[in-house]
Length: 397
Image 1 (tube, one colour):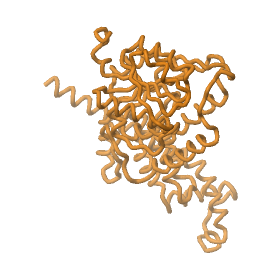
Image 2 (cartoon, helix red, strand yellow):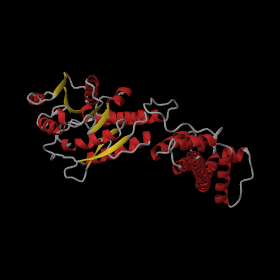
Image 3 (cartoon, one colour):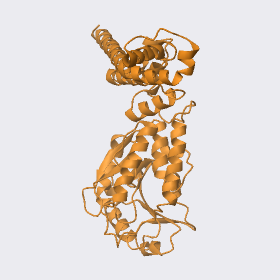
Image 4 (tube, one colour):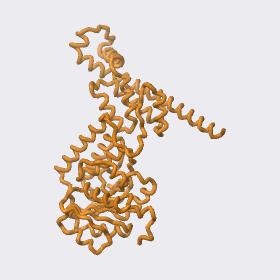
């Protein structure tokens, strides 16, 4: 059987984390063996004897004496994979939800880009999909994008391909269900690409479905994890990276050089223009004491360069831009310009000025964003074209 396996696939280990799915695990493992000869089952403290039904199959079974969580089961599999010279693990749930026949899709994806993490995008058009699963998927997808700027279609899917090198590089705080969210966020921070792999899915009818997800405890763990990750995403110290950063910081001391550096990392002029526009738009708003935090979140969610967005917002710092917004807002309210600068107008009437700042920002913010974004787009397009022409001339000479 090994002779029929591609040499690249010989470095892949299929992993089945098991916890009290004795009724389905044998079928899952048997079907996995028809696709791939290297299968490992990690029994995470099961008490239903399911692993005993695998004794006649050519698989390796590792056992935790007590339940330690799915995350720990995956890390145990990664340790085994490293010790036996496997470069990747592909995890598939033991409950029969995933189709082992989709394993070749992951094998092909690994071969095309070995350092990436691949996550199975479940087809939710099939019957019996629980409403909680649909909501949970959208919820987790949203928070991944907020925390990293990365987009995936199914963050909660357990059908995945992990490079062992990536799992070794990262550190984790949650080793239960939340692990599968944490690993994606930290991998993205480390510069590891995340990709969807469309897969089939089977959900048994409600009476037959076995789930170990505790709606109270596990949802609380997810909420606490997302709070920590959100705060970490805006912290000033750099993330632990496995792949060299593709988006170096932006500095107004050397704006042209900074833009050239960003272009050199294959960041498109349109993305740079959008980052500038977002920074200017948010910078004009009266987001007192939280401009930077909001800008980081929005830039991360949209997937544009955070450094450029924050730098653009800094152009709108007091007093000039807020004063212009207040003047425009005052004019909209009273039909005349604010000319009296006193304790009465800036102190006693400060709430009126904040409201006028907001009104004015609704006019000036989009104008600044449009102008700044257009300038950056035209400038970077010119830089890009000039660089291309220079390199072409050198090649021809």
